[in-house]
Image (tube, rainbow, N blue to C red; front, side):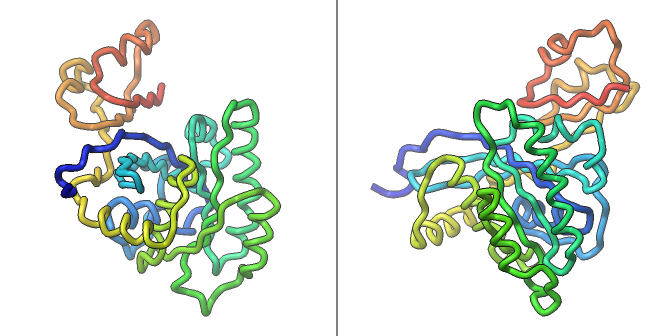
Length: 257
């Protein structure tokens, strides 16, 4: 039976939240994975960026990864708890050439533990050392990274968002670990080849901003987005369930003003 004749596997969705200090490369990591691009100029993420990408795991399992890229300045913000809530995976990212970005992960992880302490299922937490293309400038020793993983039962990853080295493998392994799928080397290579051929599965930067003057019902009805950010004043007498009822979307995030 040819690949085209194979019955398509079930779809799964996983929410992955990327945390860490500013300039450690979180957005570059997300864009490298979702869009296979790298921006040379640093641009600070304010609040949250959102990416979607579908990958295929062994067993013809289609998995849509929702990558929530949280701005580094958000650690003291009121919205961080809401960004983390419901995540199946947490990526704690640091810059291997910046010791402070590694040390500060303790604070990020404390927030994760606080948010998830009463959850029935705990998210998988991955420690991701970025910028391995700058190995000659490394200040965070590998054994320190591994010790932090062992002490907290994290999965361990080293990547370069700039070159793309091990980026896809990082997300693939995290998704597989969450779903309890064991990957051997041959399956990882085959899966990467299949995913590289599925360019239509990439959803770049699926975010919409609604102007204040727009009527919500008429404006949202035609939006082809799977997530929408409402950055408008929402009337106090409008129940959220009514607001959501006419939005053909999977997620609604309201920034009440």
